[in-house]
Length: 321
Image 1 (cartoon, rainbow, N blue to C red):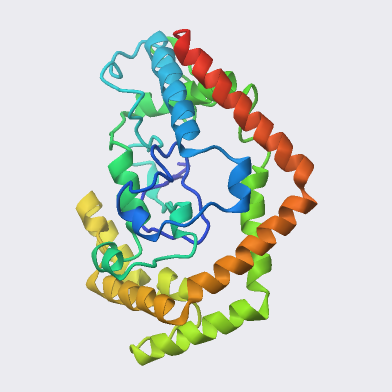
Image 2 (image 1 turned 90 degrees about the vertical axis):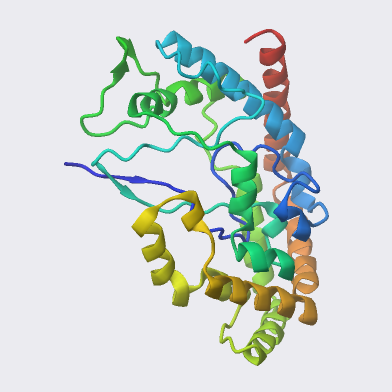
């Protein structure tokens, strides 16, 4: 029998990753643990959605999805408040699936953990903690999951309550109405260029020097990592973390181990002592300005699509979808 990999929230691997699905409240100043490391706006921020715009689109998306689900014969979403949308639907365990991992991060943690107090509580998982605060946890039945996502496989049913499941499910149908196109048909140039700018900045000798200063500081604390990314990835902790997760898989079991918290605290302190974030962010911002100059037409088009999606979302909610 074919097996699927189900993404679940486990590790907060920051450094430029982006959460899948809607992230209500993302980027809001003072919005929970992530705010401790909040940064000023980056050049590429001008081409994406603001936190308020992202929330507007999420409200419209779940309003439309809720209406679609009702049309498919589901009354189970009557208590769902689109103004407080849940996280991306996860397939329930049903004997056909195996557990996979999904990273959660936000732009405030683009450079990893920075605040020792935050690190002492969350380790490297502050983005996960913030995500869980912002996105209500909701369990879905298999029919609900299939109807919402259209992500069936193998012998999964292709209809529910006598109605065919839309392609990409009710959420995909909502996206089509909001964006006017398949939002995943092509890579998002803003996300792509965020990654490119960071990769280019990391090639600068100044970034390598900052890593060396940070690494020397960490050796003084008893740790032997060449870069902050190595400390955050925690290959030396991974087997223990995975074993803890697989043994129970409850939200409380996603709390960081004592070893992770100690490492994260040392990491944050060494970043402060060596000025690592100040150095690498300056290089990153410089490269963002460069990639904007090189790809301005694509970014302008992306910004226009984002603004159009926000306008559509507002109109759909205002007009009762």
